[in-house]
Image (cartoon, rainbow, N blue to C red):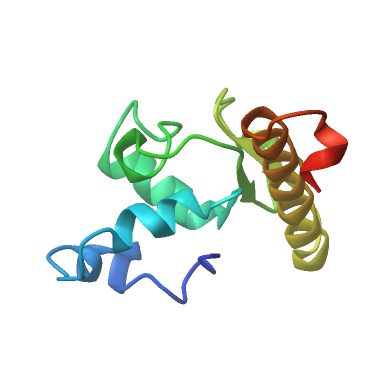
Length: 123
């Protein structure tokens, strides 16, 4: 899953449209479990920081998911350091590749931990 900054958000970066949506049992959990990395834009990140001071680097989905978070920005020099976030200054294609590489690394570590035998048998 990938949210493209500005495409999923409403006015003023609002994500209110996501609240109160009824879905079948387990749909949210399944979607969250399938995430390998989160890639977002700087404006969306700043909007969260403004609305929820001190929680911007908190993991998405109320902490139900933990993993690499990348924020694409033209101005990494003015980003407040956040231990839960990697700020990227590159083109979109490179940012997507970085996110996909993080997902692949996360998936291979997860598979190696949960599979019997060696990591190579988990392929």
